[in-house]
Length: 84
Image (cartoon, rainbow, N blue to C red; front, side, top):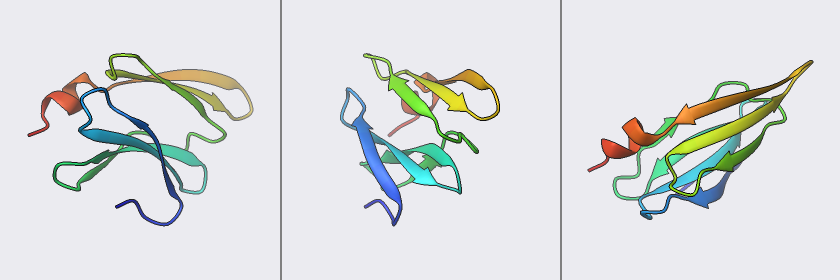
């Protein structure tokens, strides 16, 4: 299912997607659709990132650690609502 250096971290509440991390060369995040096998990249160069997925599975909060710490959010509601 997931490729080399891709690690599944969370399952969305509806069981349709796996949130996963991969190296690119930093640690980035993507969604793997369990229904059709497609993937979607969510971040680019989230070096040293920690993350939290909201309880409803609709928001991903990412704490990036580069020269300064920064928080970013990814609204997953549009992506997940388009799932077949």
